[in-house]
Image (cartoon, rainbow, N blue to C red; front, side, top):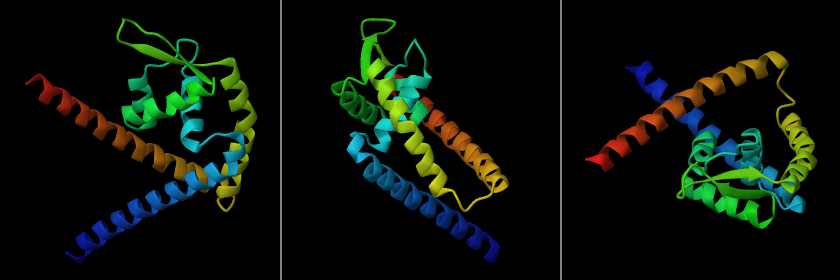
Length: 163
């Protein structure tokens, strides 16, 4: 019984620490990159849209990739559009569109990326390469679990709508 209680406590501590660190890392990024007019949420979004390639990405797919809700994608991409870094193009039908990075957006991303890498290096400087590989493997495992849970939730939501 004691081991079960301890296990629940450990998972809670780990989850709370990840949330706390995520908030802090985002705040540090936002502070450091404020002169560029770019938040970490905007940078991650710009990077994901660029990685989608020449065909761009649908906002719903972008939300799933970034593990954020569609409303957040709309808000973030509206700001990126207003800066001229992202554009909307028609999608497969009249109700859809795809997001593409503009040349100006690529220029901004390429200018900021080296600084983002430096910040990541500073943040993780205390870890040796093997620890970083282990950490990455654990994060990939956790992300796969979160994605599977999200997919199941979306499927259940769709079933509810269709009833």
